[in-house]
Length: 77
Image (cartoon, rainbow, N blue to C red; front, side, top):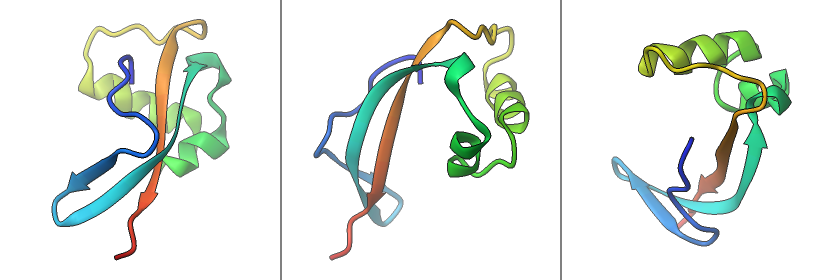
């Protein structure tokens, strides 16, 4: 994300499921690895990149561009 949308400890509700934000940090697009892409549900960085660019036509994908990473996990109630 190019904006910070949550802080550590916040609860997000998606549909009928709750998630807690565990980490928020800045990362450059050039630092994204295939492991990161797999965490997002893609096999490779290139697949992830193409998906993001399909949502944001005309957006550049510059290795030095910084984005916010939000890591979260399901809340088990």
